[in-house]
Amino acid sequence: MRKKLLAEFFGTFWLVFGGCGSAVLAAGVADVGIGWLGVSLAFGLTVMTMAYTVGHISGGHFNPAVSLGLMLGGRFDGKDLLPYWGAQVAGAIVAALVLFVVVAGGAGYEGVGAFASNGYGTASPQGYSMLSVLIVEVVLTAFFLIIILGATSAGAPAGFAPIAIGLALTLIHLISIPVSNTSVNPARSTGVALFADTPALAQLWLFWVAPLVGAALGAMIWKAMSPDDQEQS
Image 1 (cartoon, rainbow, N blue to C red):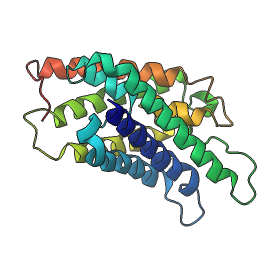
Image 2 (image 1 turned 180 degrees about the horizontal axis):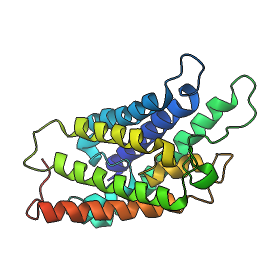
Image 3 (image 1 turned 135 degrees about the vertical axis):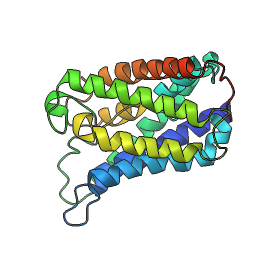
């Protein structure tokens, strides 16, 4: 278990530092910034690289919603859920702290601003309402779990699951960065919310509730399509 929790800690650290770090450090640089497309790709790459690196140790969740969905899908032992959540949230917070220190050392530092945080209303990148953000986070997390459960099922091509999952997370970001700045991951939302100069902390509840509900729905949908699937490939 210690090795599994370390894998989840460092995997989630990489996801937050790589994904949110690309948004904070590289997305808005004039003329050479990577933009939303680059940030979307960065998040997908973090998951794909860590899934190949430590997925065989911990299962490569890096996300409390994924752990819940896998538990409900019959792929994960429920007694390990809270320890996994703890490791994931801790990894996200440490990654956000390291990123904060980096940002604070920049020329002309005057605060971290939004700090890649998630939000609705005035905290949404394009001003989307709470209902819009709730819907998009539930729907996209549900599909994320369907893809994860399908790509790791016994009948799926062996060895390709991390690619499918990484590309799915890239697509999810391409859809929803303008809406919510894309969470689908309560740990990711929690880490940066602690440092953001926005209402992110007050709105954090939504980015726990919506992904967890979406994960549960995704697991239910997958089990309805493949009721006999219980084994991971």
